Every structure is written in structure tokens, then in C-alpha cells.
Figure (cartoon, rainbow, N blue to C red):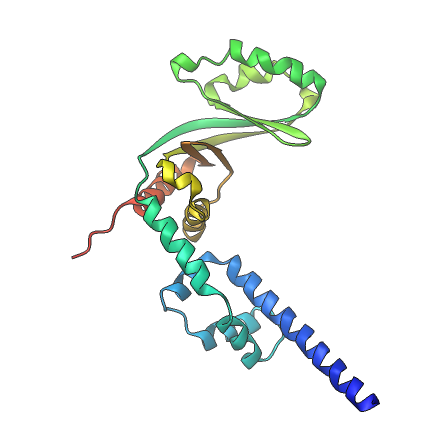
Length: 236
């Protein structure tokens, strides 16, 4: 009886051990779009990838165990979603950019709430001024034109201003209506920017528009990456 219990206990421990390996490997792949994309295209050697994971101390499992975890990764499901999203990205209606933006981080309280309406005395939509307001649980963020920054800062008490981030830029993506119900659109764009070492400062969606905010000095590069992603491929 004791022998059987030891056997079952060993099996349970082994299953737990293997489960942790799979979880660690899959988590790594989920957060590395470049590797995952190359796996989808059949450009990754599984054994070489397993050695890389062990070398980088992503897991302390044996080589065979890591290879097994990589092979069990549900790539087909990711590939299907990615393929559909990529096809939909070719239907993007328009891309536009805007530079020289700034972001103001404010505390969220009654005093700030009373000041917010005064923004509209300074921001002139007819003249093309920008005002994006993001409300979180503990803070409010304002995205505006640099030219209005000084005047807007004067509205708020200094102790209510948490931070100011200058030299931002916006990429406005006017999406096709079908894209609103297509999984993976945001992920594909974000992954492509990440692969090209472009940090996304902020993302906002207001259908039919998606707004990506990046640093001013990488705006052209980010625009070209997204434009290339959305451009229909010529098949000869």
C-alpha cells in the first residue's frame, strides 16, 4: 500500500514539475513576439531554442524537457489569429501622424475635476488643437500640443501635477469597421513595433481610430513600420 502511495506521489510531483516547465517556456514565448513569429515561419530550430532558454536561465529543466515544452506550445492557434489579424490590417483606411505633443499626469480628485472644464477655454478644436483625456483609478493624464503646455500647467496647482512628459508623437490609425471585432489587431501592431525596438508610450482606441503614442524622435521609424505592416504584399 505504501509503495503504491509513493508511486502516485512521485507521479504527482513529476506532473507538477513538468507543468512548471511548460508554464515558464510558454510564458517566455508569449512575451517574445520576434521568436514566436519566426517559429510560425519555421525559421527556429527547436533544440537551439531550448539550449538558449536554459543558457539564459529561463528554466533549469533538462534539454529534452524544454524541447518537449516548446513542441507543445499551441502555435497553430496563435498562427491562425495572427494570420487573420494581418489580413485585416491590409484594410486599414488611413494613417496619419502628429508630432510635438506633451502629456500631463495629474492627481485625481474633486479639485482637478473642477478645473478640467477650463481646458476647453484654451484648446481650440477648430484650429486643430489636440486634447486626449485618460482617466484611471488614481490619476488623470492629458495629451496636448506642446504649444499649449505652459498655459495648461498654469491651471493646475503644482502639487497636483505628478509628472510632465514632453516630445511625444501620435500615430492615428483609421481602421476598417470589421477590425473592431477581429482579435489580435492591437497585438500585431504592438509586436511589430516591439520587434523594431520602438517603445509605445500610450495607446488609445476610439473607433474607428486607434492612437499610438511614441517618442517624437522615433515617429518616422514607427510610422514606416506600421505602414509596411499594413501594406498589401505583391505576390509575383
